[in-house]
Length: 275
Image (tube, rainbow, N blue to C red; front, side, top):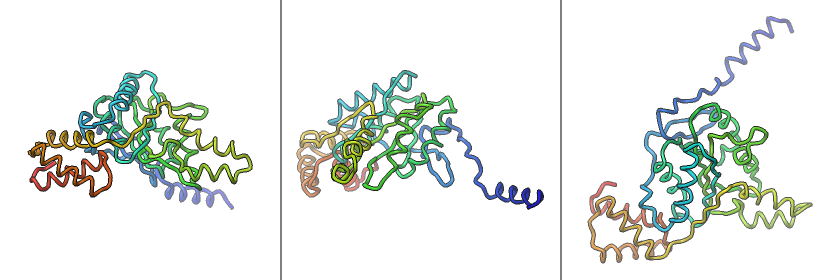
């Protein structure tokens, strides 16, 4: 193969290869979403979140995460955080509310299925002067899922270490990020059960903060709906609100912050209030 042929092949490959990723103007938005194929950080013009004062029953987690985020925003050491526990109890809402309350930090959402690309994202973020809160919502892994290995790039950082300007907050319904039957299956099928289980369970140990979320009682549930009513100007008596909210949660078979918000959406619609 002569030199001209090799040159033409090289030029053709250059034309069809993806263009190098260019970091966005981080001053254009407070939040971004990481996408792959091609790699890009899309700015978010409006973040879907509620005021931190409207989150009821999560005082301890709120205070801990606020303090950790303030330390990080100030350039001080801060931990990665895993928010785990009951569904619908405000884990992701708290992350977004804390981001709004602290300020000075860019929020970057990463989808679980895009974790294998996390090294490329970290290389981009490491090269900037901004500080970034990586947010991975509803993080969990199934039996044949190896994405958890990519997550270690954020938690441990390999040879380079985690970028000083990046911290990870993840939410999950599972404390160890793996279903119990998956852990038990490792014990029963692996050549060395203890090591196989340790590799997966130790992933959650790499988070410096574990913040647990638990189901709410009726008083907290009613406090949530009253707080939303007051915040959005929905006029209703305490007696009627109590009766309707309890009936709503009974039909759902569950009490949580998510159920409270779904009730408020229905109530606001009936009352002609725009949220």
